[in-house]
Length: 174
Ligand SMILES: Nc1nc2c(ncn2[C@@H]2O[C@H](COP(=O)(O)OP(=O)(O)OP(=O)(O)O)[C@@H](O)[C@H]2O)c(=O)[nH]1
Ligand SMILES: [Mg+2]
View 1 (tube, rainbow, N blue to C red):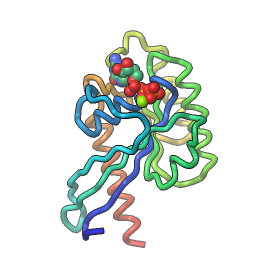
View 2 (spheres, rainbow, N blue to C red):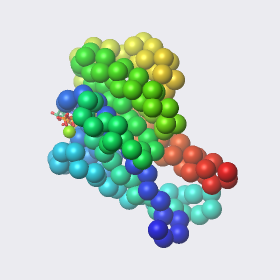
View 3 (cartoon, protein in one colour):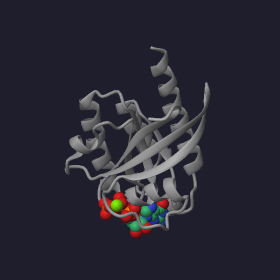
């Protein structure tokens, strides 16, 4: 691998229709409009400022359906995003189960709970109270975003990149 080049794998997990493909499209193309072909690993190359100069980072994005090879698909992930659709209460229960599974793996990966479809907030079936409770139980951060409008996305993704970069630097110091 060329000097200053690294790869981060991000797994995007959640039950059917929760918005996994739309989020991956938002990360790669900055719009939700591009149809992502199902399940294949998607790639986006970013240039970031590392503490020792510029870094080129290949972000690899993997869509995961709970109950379908999640253990194998999550292998090598640096971060796991667990999605729940604000308009679908069952998707929050599914996120709860998936967070439990990720916790049981004790992998030390970065884990985030992401509430999707923020643009449909008037149809929301759960909100901060439920998100705080779930996040607190698994000790993970949460964010509310819309892949459709981009609301909340830049802040969420900016923080994730910073966290991944901090881990990279911390790992190098060991
Ligand atoms: N309003 C709104 N709709 C969204 C958003 N994200 C996804 N959707 C819609 O929700 C539906 C499912 O989105 P996908 O991204 O295909 O969800 P998925 O989790 O990849 O679904 P599967 O791969 O089938 O499990 C589509 O009709 C999307 O257009 C969003 O932020 N806002
Ligand atoms: Mg999909």
